[in-house]
Image (cartoon, rainbow, N blue to C red; front, side, top):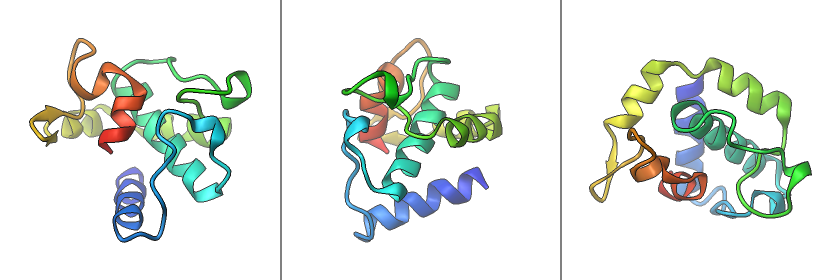
Length: 116
C-alpha cells in the first residue's frame, strides 16, 4: 500500500490534479490531499534518512512538519528497509533520492520533498 500511495500521489501531481506542495512550509498546507502527500513524503524521509527529525506542524509555523500524527506514524510504521533501498537506487538529475551520511536527498526534508 505504501508504494501505491506514493505512485498515486506522484501521478496526481504530474497530471495536474494536485498542485505542487508548499515545499519548505508544510504548516501553510490547508488541502487535505496535499497534507496526506506531505505527511507521506516526510514519513519516508523520517524512516529512510533521519529518524525523529520531523516535528508536528502544531509546534512550528515554518519548515517541514507533519499535519496528522496518526497518519504520519502509521505510514512510518509501514515503511521497511526494502523501500529505502529501492529509493537509494533512484537518481534525479544525478542526485540520489536516499543516500547515506546526510547526502543528496537526505540532506534535508525540504530537498527530499522537492525531489519527490
